[in-house]
Picture 1 (cartoon, rainbow, N blue to C red):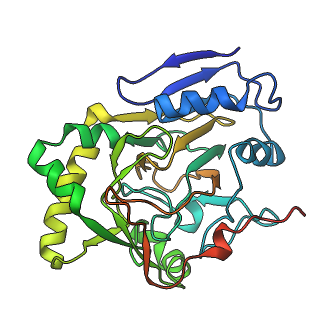
Picture 2 (picture 1 turned 90 degrees about the horizontal axis):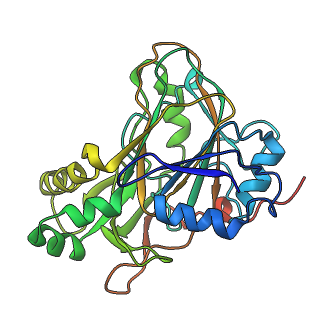
Length: 293
């Protein structure tokens, strides 16, 4: 079995010597157990090509298309090219694709091209953030719902105009509970981030203030692991219980990652209600299984 090294007190483990091409060498059930425990796994020098990356991600469930609005990498319908040259610089804390009714449950990122400096990825444990909340804030958060939308630019201004146009070519707004229970572990977690734009029933000003307070607990340093990439590394994180951020600290140097996400289900609040569409649709064309070429 590969070596598992815990790299953060609250989130993150590094996996060394894993053969991800052979499910028998490193069983999916064991990887999933480690993911549930550590929230984010870093596979050093994973040795995967495009097909290997896809096959590995598919071990955890049906794959989504690359993105609801952004085109996939050429010839790779499941792959989103996170390419700084196109203005894709995700330097705002977020959970992937929460603006649709069924956000991905798992995200996988593979490093293709990296800058000579900078370009790290930060990943935060949103369940630890929930546990850190004082009881009055937890009781408030438990009752709140937030509307998430893609009509929000999290790219840098320099190259973002065209990327933003494509990103918002179809607007989605979906209401999710601010607190959800993880469907496998039962952990309560804050489900907010950059796509959460307003609190249902409150004004814009009130929403911003409350979301800012809650988000400040997610981004406490003790809840964060910093991934320093090497070409060929693969990072897997539980999109149901984390947020992530890519610091824009590498000037105009190239940075290219490939992202493949595993389809998830609607988010259920503590009262049993599920996420609902406010604008757009339920993005079934995004979450529908991708047919093999």
